[in-house]
Structure formats: C-alpha cells, structure tokens
Image (tube, rainbow, N blue to C red; front, top):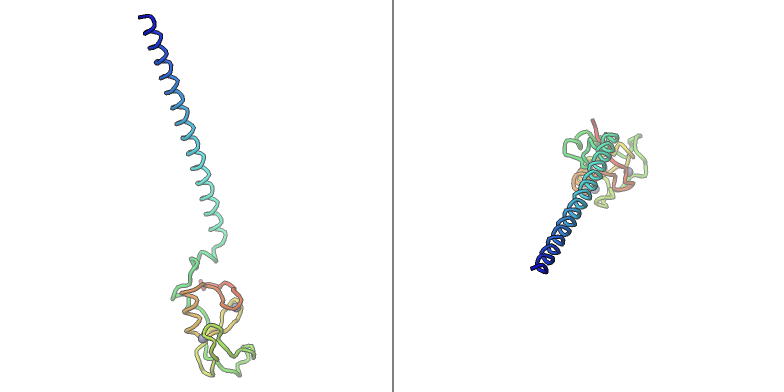
Length: 141
Ligand SMILES: [Zn+2]
Ligand SMILES: [Zn+2]
C-alpha cells in the first residue's frame, strides 16, 4: 500500500514535469514565431520605403504598357536627318537594315534607334530596357 503511494506520487511528479516542459517548448515556439513575424514586418516596411523613394521605377511597374509606348518618340527614318547618328543603319532586334522612310523609334534615355515595331514588341514582351545598352526606358508621366 505504501509502495503504491510512492509510485503514484512519482508518476504524478513525472506528469507535472512533462506538462511543464511541454509548456516551455510551446512558449519558445511562440516567441520564435513572434520574432520572425516582427522581422518580416520590418523587412516589409523597409521594402515599402525603398519603393516610395524610387517613384520613376514604380511608375512603370517594372513593365512598359502599350500606353507608355505612345509617349515614346517615333519618326520616319531619313538618312539626311541631322538629329541622328550617321552610323545608324541597322536594327539590332531583327538584324535588318533600317530603310529610308521606315517607321522608327528613338529611345529617350540613350537615343538608340530601332524599328518601331521591333522595339515596341521588345519593350512589352522582353524587358523595359534598351536592347543595346540596357538603359532603362524612361516612362512618360
Ligand atoms: Zn527591326
Ligand atoms: Zn540604348
């Protein structure tokens, strides 16, 4: 009878200890989550601040839309045009010659010239940067 009491007490003590450690573990997990959540929020806030400080980038949303293209300067190619670099003879996107009278676009950031159709497709589908020098296309507005 006395031995049974001791065993019961031992089991009871063991249970209390187990529950205590379980509680401690849960507490630890809770704090780790709280910490990572705090860091995540901080990172998010920092990223948002970064976004605000670069409005010219966010106005494009990283992509050029068809409406943005309308704001880029286009012209009919003419070899005699004094504004153009006399070396311009080829569109690097389609690797074809730019012929007299063809519709072209000059990128406002770097003044590189391409066929209008070629560069429009490039900017919308590939990347909003110049295919030659990688200069970011300045978004109108
Ligand atoms: Zn072309
Ligand atoms: Zn360029």
